[in-house]
Image 1 (tube, rainbow, N blue to C red):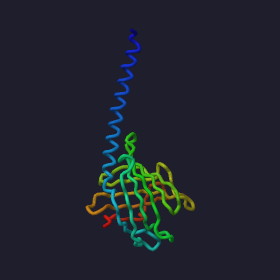
Image 2: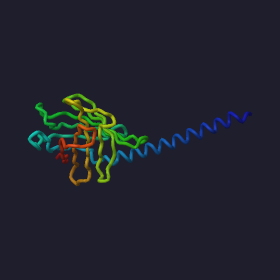
Image 3: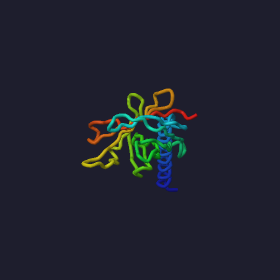
Image 4: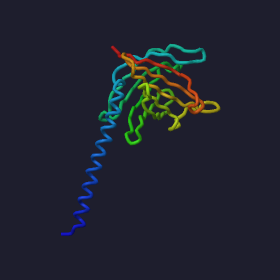
Amino acid sequence: MEIKPIVLAVAALGLLTGTALAQEDVSARQLAAMARLAPLAGDWVVTGEVMGPEGAQAMTPGTAQAHYAFNERGIEETAQIDLGSVDGLTELRTLFTYDPYREVYRLSVMDGAYGLLDIYEGGFDEEGRLVTTNLRADTAFPIEGGQLHFKLVHDFTGSEGHDFAVYMTADRGESWLLYFDQHFAPAD
């Protein structure tokens, strides 16, 4: 009996076992990170303000529904909200995920008004808010003479629902202006 095939088989088994254990750790980290987003899950009434040339304007109340998907490795949110469009409520679909290899939350957002898919990345700040931007992915909105990038801030620190704010920048994040803020209250 040759020793070489036995040694190779034992080495391969060790490698597979180590890979399986490492994958279990990655999976556990991913599930733990997604558990931090649990306050998103549910049915919501969305109210807030959108900033315009005349200042803050009350938004028409909207709705949102969010639930875990992909074996609890993602959260899908569908919202009907007022973005200040003349067409009324806009449908937004967001997929929240966590990349355990890069240790970053990633959101993909598509809206029914423009049909553009934005990619946001970020993490939790020292105040316990999920803060993501589309700066690295560079999924900016073109404007005359430049581009608008956005920062999304999900604040789960309140006791009744959660808050969501969108900031915009025309200088790649050197300065941010509030675009709109919303409050998600539990639907009856």
